[in-house]
Every structure is written in C-alpha cells, then in structure tokens.
Length: 467
Image (cartoon, one colour):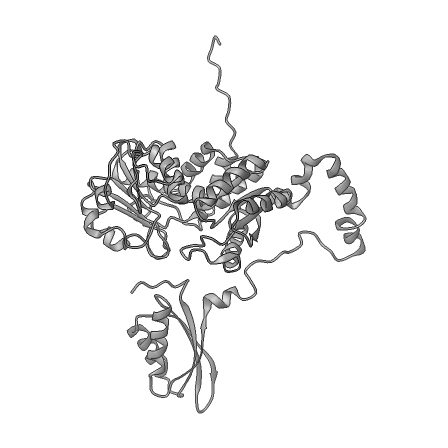
C-alpha cells in the first residue's frame, strides 16, 4: 500500500498497561497493519497505566481505520482518541493578516491611520499610478474560485473550496512573499464572476483564477484579460503548462530527443490539457494528439464542442481517429491530465523506445508510476510520494512575483515560455537523471529564477556596424 505521510497522518492516544514492552508491541502492530510510526510520545505515566500518543502515516482513510482496529485489538490497550493531523492543521484556517508597521503609540496611529493616511489618499487620487507603490496592491493577488472544479473533487462549492484557496495563499507568501487573499464566489454564472472580479480588481496587483470548471474558465479568463489592466493568470491552465514544459524539456535531455521530433499524446482536453497543448506548440513541439471522451480529437469531427474543435484544429495533423491505445502506440510522450487508470501498463510498451510518461491526474494518476516505469524511461506524476512531482507551486509564486515587480498589465505566451525555461534550468547537468527532471518545490532559487524570467524585458537588437 502506498503511504502518504502528509495527507493521512493520525495520532492515537492510547491507554496501555504499565509494561515497558508495550512500546515495541505498538510499533510492530502498526507496521503489521501497513502503517509507519513517525512518533511515539509518553503523555502520562501512572502506576496502573501509561498514556501513549502514537503518530503514524497511512495510505488512506480506510487504511487509517484498519490500523486503529488492529491497535485496539491488543490486550489491555484502549484507544482513547484518534486525531487526524491534517484536520488539526486546518482548525482556525491557515492564513492571517498581520500589520507591517508598528501600532503602539499615538504617533504610529497618526501616520498609519488618521490624520496622516488622508494625505496619502489625496496624493493617490492625484497620482493613481502610485497606488501599487504606496499600498498593498503592489504585492497582492486575489485567488478567485467559484468552487466548480476543486482538485479532483469536482463541483463542491465555494465554502468547501476555501481550504484549498487558503493553502494557495499560504504558498504565495511562503515562496514569493506575496500577499494573497482567497476570494470564493457564491455564483457559477460567468457574467457574475467576471463582474465580481472587475469590482474588486482595484485592490489587487493580479488575479489568480483557480478551480473554475471548463469551458467557463476560458470565457472568464478571456473577458477579464480584456477588461482589466492587471495580469490574469489561470493556474490550472498556465501554471500546469509551464511546469509540464519545464519537465518535458529536461526529460528530453535525459532520453536524448528533441521537442520538435517527438510525438506527444495529451490525455484530457479540458483547461489544463488545452493550455499544455498551446504551450508545447509554442515551445517547439510539432506533433500532438489529444485524447478525450470522444476519442482522439480530430478537426474533421463535427460532433466536437467549440472548445475541443479549436483544440483539434491545431493538433492531429494526420487526422487520426481511435482510442487512447491507438493514440499512444508509436508515441514518444504521454501527458495525462484526465482521469485515474485510463492508461494500461501494456500500452506503454507499445510506445517508442525511451518513452516519457507524465501521469498527472490527482490524487490517482492515469497509471501507477511504478507500473509505467517498467516500460518508460522517464516517469512523472502529480504526487509527492514518487519522484518527479509536477507541481504548480514551482510556477505561480515566481510568475506573480515577476509580474508584480514589473508592474505588468498582462501575461504573454513569451513570458510563460521563459518561465518554463527558467524552471528547467534550475536542474543542473550533474543533477539530471530519470528520477530528477524537475527541481524540488523547496528549492528557493526556483521562484527567483522564474520571477527574473517573467520580469525580463525584450531588448532591442544590437545594431550591426554600418546600420
């Protein structure tokens, strides 16, 4: 059983006999049940009993229950309480607002608030271009969702989406020192979403759209880009695409192939798949097939929705038809942003030599990475418990840091390509191998490199002698 220490970690408070051997018995029992003990603390010792806190990681909620049942079956052991450490971490929320200036004296208040703040407001009314410099706008992002496509959970609504948006805000602060606020809208009407964001935009330096279902997300992003003078970034699309291109660039270094000579199959024609295709084509890939519920998307298929018809029009140059097996046969690269277990292990064997498989569906990928590695030279997933995690946190903090630093009003395709190149470049030649094609999310150089790449300005060509 796979063990995910971060997501399914529990602490059991146990009442046990005062027997020194009980600690070993508890550790052995948890291990026999498939769990991993990560901590064991003596909370209380009395002449007639011990109170022991056992923290262990498990594979999922059902596995947690089985571990508890095994421990409870031990002679003389009582499970007094079980705490899910993930839920404990979320109590009270994960973010807060703190003041950046002292507020301890009358002088402090007179400058931070009345009457001093009035002088600043008047100055900004006269010179609105200074708002980003003199307010939090210059380092702030709105993380906007309607709760319609949250992680792999689907349409669970804005309230249930809030913990995810809080997490996103925490990552912005941790990795790029950006103040981000969760904006969970209680509507899934495109017009209302667009208008709501337009109304709050003056307080932010950028808009990060998050977990909005396709095809609504395309329309929301397009309209906001047209109406706002601050950058609008849909992380599920562009963040994913940046990291995928970065990882694929390095995977090609491993297998000795070039982007312009490989065939890429993208499983999933939604928001992420569409953005990945767009960036791959801009990055030099010339042969792409997209597979979705309808089969291989082809421009001669009149039954496709407008969004998928547009995707088909710029891919599948040979107008192939068929299922996913047909698509991956003879392909060099598989990129999955679709559904669990759609790619069979035997099909990977039908791909070209030195195949690359990115199975990114979360939490359960299109194929088990271990199964994929039997035939593929390089395997990546969206999970943290396997090598080569494709994680958007490698992109969005640095992207927005660069946008805010440059006071950008929009984000361009060229910026996305530069961001992908910056991430790929953070893996040095002496580090690169099939199990390390993408830098760690905790590599502090990554957001800095991405920010520099995003903020970079195109320089005019150097004139040649005689011009």
